[in-house]
Image 1 (cartoon, rainbow over the protein chains, first blue to last red):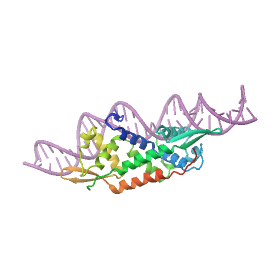
Image 2 (spheres, helix red, strand yellow):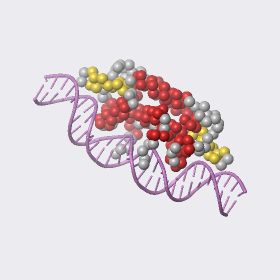
Image 3 (cartoon, rainbow over the protein chains, first blue to last red):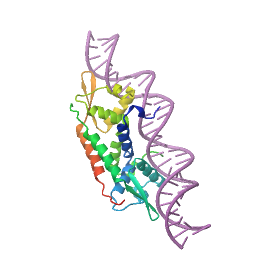
Image 4 (cartoon, rainbow over the protein chains, first blue to last red):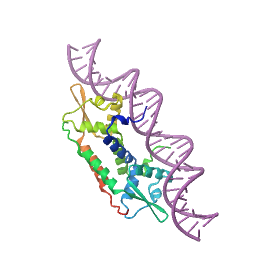
Length: 107
Length: 107
DNA sequence: GGGTATTATCGTAATATTGCAATATTACAT
DNA sequence: ATGTAATATTGCAATATTACGATAATACCC
């Protein structure tokens, strides 16, 4: 045992958890912070910027990509990572709904 | 190696990641969903409600407690878990700020 | 006190995550 | 083709998470 029992949860719960998992590491927050504040597409200052090895950054980028938060396009010889704003807003809404859905009123 | 390098990130990044980590498991989402929709304090229907063993639920509750999202008080013989609304709103704001802080405009 | 119900902790096994060195791939130069 | 710079993949070690049976602790009742 030790694996998450996905079969007993709703799709929504699993999706929200998956999105949260991507945000559950400071390196990925730092990466998203950095990318989301660039005027132009950035490539990989990230390695220098964040202070982790290149393969590690690459792996984190991959995690972020997996939930669709990144669009990567080529521009010159450099890969260009950008936030996928549609998906960003989607996740924003999911979190908003989660935090907004509190009706409990006891303690 | 394998441990997160906390020393290279900002406190804000680490805090947000820690909050996200709590939400990064469907069981904890399910628990929070359930508690946050109760009119009255609930105790442990959670074990029956969610379908995980009692020690597992207890551990998840503990994780949620660690970031201050739960207030537990005694009422009769049953422990009563409630959402700490102050903290809930705090986290809501942290996530809102994170998602709202996007200025990038390229792809 | 003894019995019962609820919650917490301990111990342990299975699995997942994190990080990096080494290596491979890709794209563009010359 | 050869060289160079950027990114990805592989392999592996260290650590963390998830889950649960067994057991302990706690609060109530009689």
